Length: 308
Image 1: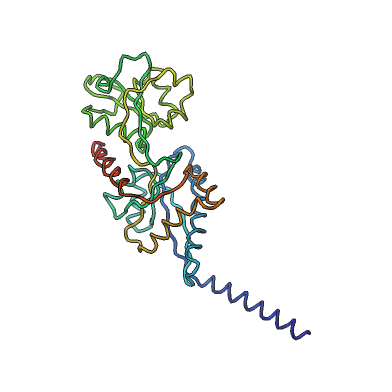
Image 2: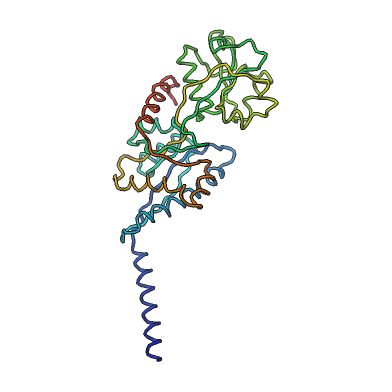
C-alpha cells in the first residue's frame, strides 16, 4: 500500500512539473495595441478604458491558439499622447495594432504599412457624422453665412468636432483661420474649446457664433434646456467610428486570429464587460462598402491642414 501511495505522489509531482515546464518553455508572442490618449487631463482614463480589453484579447487569442504547443500570445497596451509619438513607436516596429478614429487610421494607412481590418460599433452603429449649430435666434441659416464669424471645435484630434466639420466647411468653399480675430471678413475663424462640454456653452454665451458636435455628443454633453436654445444649420458626410488597423507585415494567420479574437469578445460575459469598459458595443469585419466610406472620408480629409 505504501509503495502505491509513493508511486502516486511521484507520478503527480513529475506530471505537474512536466506540464508547468512545458508552459514555461512556450514562446510568448507579444502583440502591442496602440491607442491615442484623448484624455489629456486624466492620463489614467485611457488605461482604465483599454486595460481589460487587452487582457481579454490575450485570453481569446490563446484559446484560439490552444493547439499550438510552442507559442502563447500576450496583448500589451501602448498609450500615445500625440500622433507623432504613435508614429515613432510604429516606425521602430513596436506597434502591431492600432485602435483609433478614421482620422488616425487613414493617416497611418497613407504613411505606413498599416491596413484597416475591423470596425468598432457604438450604439449598434458603425458610422457617425457631425452637426454644425448656432443659437436659435441667430441670423445664420446656412454655412455661407458663417463668413466673418467664429466656430468652436473640440481638439485637433477630434473627428466629429474638428476633422469632419473643418473638412466639410473647407470643401464648401469657406476659408478657415485659427484665430478669434474676425477682422478678415471672408474667413471663418475657429477656436478649440478643448472639451466637448464647453462648445454649446461658448455658442450660447456668444464666445463663438457656431459649434460642431456629433448628434450623440450633442445629446450627451448638452443639457436639454441648452439644446432648446440652439439649432442645426448643416450636417457633414458620415465616416466610420472606430477602426482596428494591423501592421501589414503580420502573418495572415496571425491577422485571422486577431480578427476572430475581437469578434469573439461579444460571446462571453467577460468579453462584454471589457467592451463596455472601452465604450464599444461590438466589432465587425471591414466590408467592401466600408472601404468605400473610408475612401470618401480620405478624399474629404484632403481639405484638412497639411500638419494633420
